[in-house]
Image (cartoon, rainbow, N blue to C red):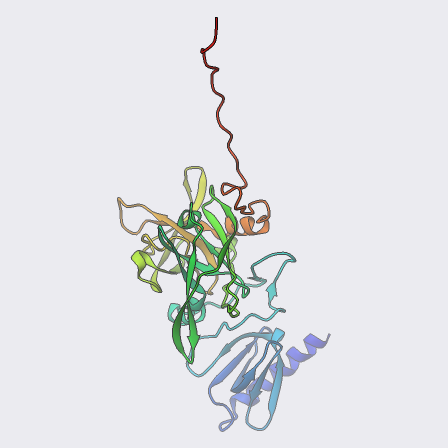
Length: 323
C-alpha cells in the first residue's frame, strides 16, 4: 500500500516540477512507476537519490528509480543497488532482475570499459572481464592453456583519465577446456575494488540486436567494435554459439560481447578466417552454468588437467621372456 501511495504522490507532483522554471538544472529521474521528476541531482548513494526541484529537496528511495539522466546525456546505469539486482548465495556474479534501459554504445563504453582487461601469458595474450569487485574475471581457456604465469592489465579511471596498472599475482580458480572457459582471480595485496559488469539473459536476445565488443585484437588494447547479433543459436561441433558480425580478431578471445544495456551476453571465442564478419561467442547461459558449478571445475596445480584425468592406454605385454 505504501508503494501505491508513493506512486500516486509522484504522479501528482510531476506537472508541478515541469512548470518550475528556475528549479530544474536539466537532470531527470525516471521512476519505475512511469513518472519522471526533473530538477538538479545533488548526490547519489546506494540507497537514495537527492533531487533539488527548486523550492524543496526530495529524498527518493533508490529502489523506486528506473534510471537517471543528467542534462542531455543518455540514462546512466551506475553502480547497481542490491535492491535492483539478483544475487544468489555462493555465486560470483550479478545479474539484473528486470531488463535494464538501453542506451548508446558510446555511453556504455564509458560505463563498462574499465571492467575489460588484457590477459597476458608468456605464450601470448587475450582479453577478459571482471564479474565482481573482488577480482574474479573470465577469459577463454585457450588464452591460459598450459600457462601458470599470468598477468592482467587493468585501466583504472583516475580523475576522468585512464591509468594502466599490471597485476602479477593471478590465480587460476577453475577452467573448463571443453567450453573454453577459465575463471581467474587477481590476488595482489594492493588490489582495489574492481569495476565489474553484469551478466545478461540469453532468453531476451533476438537476431538483429545491436551488440559490441571490447578487447585487445592483435594486442591493441581497449578496442571497441560494434555490430549486430546475426544468430543466437548457431550450431558448431555440437555446441550452440552466438554469431555476430562484430569484428573479432586474435586477442579478442575471452573478452565480453555486450548488449545495449551494458550486460555481457557472450564471451568472444573465435571467428571464421575464410570470411568476413563471422565471429562467434560463447552464450552467457553456458558461462553462468560454469560459474554456478565452478567447484566441479576447480583448478589444481597438482593436476593441471582437472577435473578430467586420462590414464595411459593399456599396453600389450612384451613378448620378451616368453617360451
